[in-house]
Length: 78
Image (cartoon, rainbow, N blue to C red; front, side):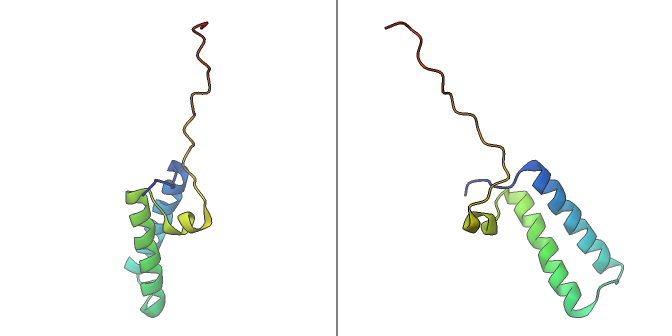
């Protein structure tokens, strides 16, 4: 799996997961909503750990910085 989740994206996902956990722990959300938000928060953490998001892959999105290719030509004079 090619990494497609960048640093800023990871920070945002961690914040979302922390908010989800806080809402569930404080029992602000209960029942079905707590389960749904808990699954979303867990998915956010998994993508942060793996550095890969399947939804991004489907849509061809990547927030990772692109590696610069060496475009300099050989200047040996031959």
